[in-house]
Image (tube, rainbow, N blue to C red; front, side):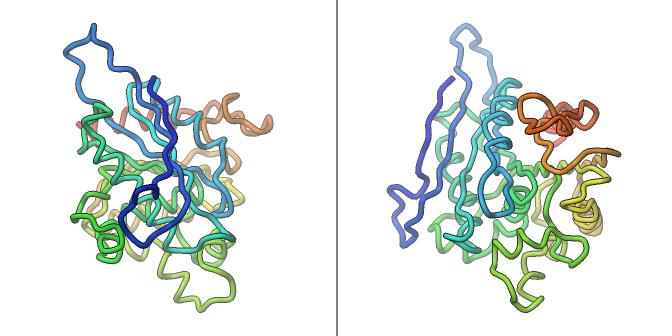
Length: 278
């Protein structure tokens, strides 16, 4: 397997000077399999409430996808208190561009790239799906339209809505700052911004998540339905927040071992292969 770690803002010909890192996990191209197709890819955004990037939702997830034949990438994006919005969105946009620009080198299909996020990382992933076409991103990154567009979204127990009582408000405070007008938080409450340009999504959550209420996924899915954007939604009946792979690879405690909710991964791989990337 080819592995690398890239500072995505090194050699950037623009005014953005930041530190964000892309870890690359590309399975070896085996010469004994000359008919192998170019691989699909997954860009992973770990959670952490926009305060840090959880390692539990990083390399173990990347290795799981690599083990199923995908190229996998992990983004360590900027977080509070050093950076605020829109820097994380610029980070994930830049990462997507780098991946797509290296499609030939990494033997991948540039039209089959999913962005996967967990918790607040899922807010970042979904933000790219919702806002990729914004002129401010295109202008800041000096890119042609569409270079940063994901082809699919994978959202695990996502922070998506900012609505009080249904949101993980700390994530929004870390992203934007505290004590702002409610309209500022609504501007990044993603169910308000779903449009016809958003890619299809695979969404999973647990019913009794006490940190990020399941309403977050339901509101976003309803907005996708209202805009006729296809999605697959799984609400597992039990499971605490932050399950990641739901087994010994990522469990910080016994209660994060959840075999039933762990079915999300195989369901997701099936969805990618049979629907999103077919």
